[in-house]
Amino acid sequence: MSGASGATVWLTGLPSAGKTTIATALAERLHGESRRVEVLDGDEIRTFLSAGLGFSRAERDTNVQRIGFVAELLASHGVTVLVPVIAPYADSREAVAKRHAAEGTPYVEVHVATPLRVCSERDVKGLYAKQAAGELTGLTGVDDPYEEPQSPDLRLETDGRSVTESATALHTLLRERGLL
Image (cartoon, rainbow, N blue to C red; front, side):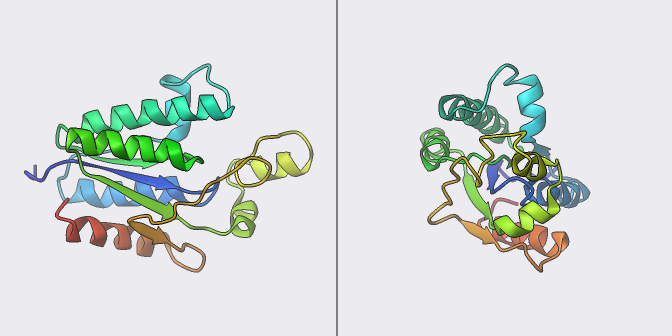
């Protein structure tokens, strides 16, 4: 295993932006390089760590803070933690970043900047279709806010870019930052 320190890499973006797909591709590459890596998938976290939480602003913030705590804990022990979680509110993401800074743990914010039109066409989980049919309310970026990061460490424009290209761009940033 590499002696590189750990880091949290938070991939924020709209539903179906490609956050988990990119994180999984990067994780596979990092595993192939014998690096310690974990993906904290938002859906899995909601099932196991945040069961019972809904989608109000306060509950979304609680979810993000829990994930941020676990990510920082793992990263502080030398794991590269990939977090493909929407985290729609800037203040929630900022609180996680500040916690990492206070602990001296590297934190990288990545905006998976896929246009809403493309996300709704991909509609991986059928959320956009349910929202359009009136079966779902509070969909991030549609009828619930998504506050785009103003100055992320990396903004990945995924429309017209392959998953491999996106994962490689993120890998390059982590290498340049001395985090690999």
